[in-house]
Image (cartoon, rainbow, N blue to C red):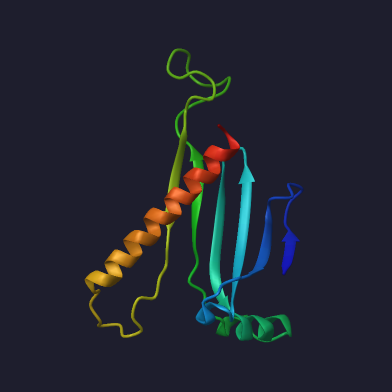
Length: 143
């Protein structure tokens, strides 16, 4: 829906994305996302946002009333590489990458509620699926 650049790199931006889903409960959701990459690594941070709340903000309303539970991931180089790397430890480009994934999920609105095994299984599945998709995307770019 919208993309606002925040750097000369076209991939560094804040975007407002529409969720295309057959699930009717997700049809009123948008995704607010920030992406950034430079020589030190890259990250994507995102949060689902209610369409009504976002329209209120876009019309000049107070953004403090919009609930955000940001999640995201960072991909950073793992180990030395390049001309400044110590000789004999790793060759250029062989350092690999370190993936860090973080989620904020509202499982139950009651603060004293205990996590159910179903909730834990759902979160575990979400993390596994997300890591697999990120890995597949990175492998496609660099066979």
